[in-house]
Image (tube, rainbow, N blue to C red):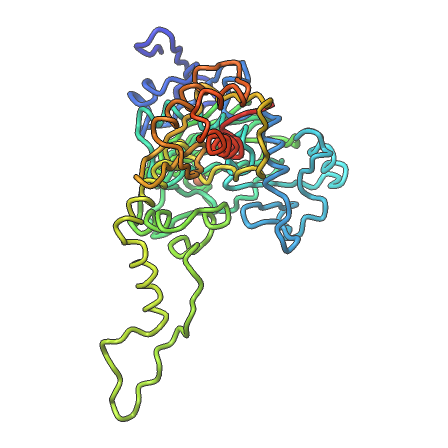
Length: 443
Ligand SMILES: [Fe+2]
């Protein structure tokens, strides 16, 4: 079978369960034939630089993402299990820099586990490593240009191990999913429609529904897409060798408007994005009692008065609707969202580092820097972060244009010399912020 487009070969191989296989990433083709319709297996070019995830980035990101929290425990966005035993303390189970690679980590664990199986799952995986985040954003840029930018973040989840701990059974998600296989083999089983009639969202024992299903085995360098409407289940590892995959979910079904509103009121963090109480994550802690005062016997209670806890909530929302601050907040969030390219929170800014005149700075050509003039100041954004500058619009434009046109990097002093003397230090601070955000590279 051939697609109408000559540059994309489509064929059917047994392990694909009959889904189309296409060579190379083409968002137009995906939009025309598969998006919100049916799964497709995408064979990416051999060159790892064309892949959204590379083994070295994934390893570095796994080390950063699994660092213990302040309580010395495995953080909430990480799950590590040996067979069915879910661990709460790191105890040397998680990847560390000394392992050198995912293979090194797998090797260390294999020696310790003596045949027992393990699984490591990391959610919010894009939030921990700037290089991984940038490549992922660049890879999906074409999708967002084609389909628009989702109002809530895409999600990224890393799976590693020789055992699937996701004991959630067959289910569906509200995301369009892209599973990228990095190492080993992964198998996903699908049902185009919900195979059961009971009022349950997932089924652990799905054997009797097998006849209506098909399974797709995904190999390294391949990416499997499936629409949010497909019920699916990840099946147990195909062999002892650990498999590594990264799943990206682009939100397709929005359940409640409140779900997205919370993100506009508060700053998401990896922790808040995984919170069970998404609507309230980041809201200020309760300042007063959660009970209304007892009703006095004489019946004198004032019906028109809010209990203090509710008054606090109303004050909080009221504080957000002062027109001037609301407009600034909308601009700030817009700038952050557009420069995050659908993946937030983005990795946090690096510690401040002074830029002297001799430092060479480079702004990659595909790194968006956007700004908004509030009148009193300019809000400047890159990589999902914002800063304010007192540079006037004209000087800011000159600085950004100079950065854009110097492909091989420019000496900081030379850049600053082109600006009015009074603007030099403010411009230096802005360059330092862009560097903290990981947008500007310097040496
Ligand atoms: Fe799922």
